[in-house]
Length: 356
Ligand code: KG4
Ligand code: ZN
Image (cartoon, rainbow, N blue to C red; front, top):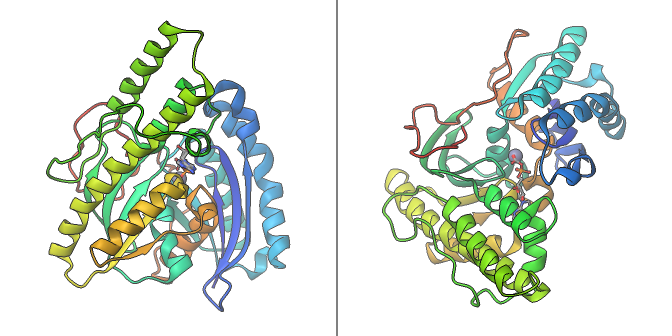
């Protein structure tokens, strides 16, 4: 099977072609980042994002097909991110996918963006269900059991900010560039994580829920204190704070994931894989710490290459291909979904600002 994937849910326009035949599954994988458009605002501006998707998507799809050396006639299906995400962008991708499917008479597959992240490890490492997944991105932070395509059991979720959001907002406070994760990771390399004392939200508590908004507040208070004493933040202060933040986020994630491993083991005694996915999974220190945790619990650790952790269309094409193989296709009247939880049975998390 050969499937075209389209991703437009946030600030990356992406088109990819994947296949399940042969060793090389990703045949083409193009990502056009909108960083330059959003950077002056320090974050993603939804209207700018939607317009940029509109301008760049068509040539990107043509480029992906050209790179794959195929035409629309060679495709077995068209997959697209149907949500969750910024609705303007999701509409752009949805309309493009519908147009191709309608004109070429192809099956249409609406993919949950989170399912794209969740199934990436099956694309890269061919792992079997069930597995434990830590999904950490800019808008989402959850621990889930991936039981099958379309079947997820949520063990825990953030009750406020996502981990990526904590990186992004903190980077802004520290005067570092957007997106925050990569710039904090870079700054932290020269920093001392022990100089400043930041909280470890939720650490030691039962269950697998997460919380990050307190961390951001604690960081802001330290920044304000330092600013009162002098002309502002010295480069060493920024490096030490970045290192402290990265360590605190890592500690929380490792602690919560350890609890999730215990819960996963109870439900699935033979399950052996811990998978990390989503943009924050690109963080090298976090990958190292999760690998150590997995090893200490006799688990196999799977982390897709960083370029497949951050948003891309190969993951959407792959999730679409998995759905298509099961006959899970969608109608041309599919309505884009700004919110779309992976586990609709999970109770809503307490706290404000909780994403799907
Ligand atoms: O999955 P993703 O590309 O988009 C969403 O679906 O949200 O994740 C983006 C998030 C951003 O918050 C970004 O700061 C974070 O992933 N991120 C990182 C790193 N690279 C991206 N966080 C920590 N370390 C990184 N190296
Ligand atoms: Zn994402």
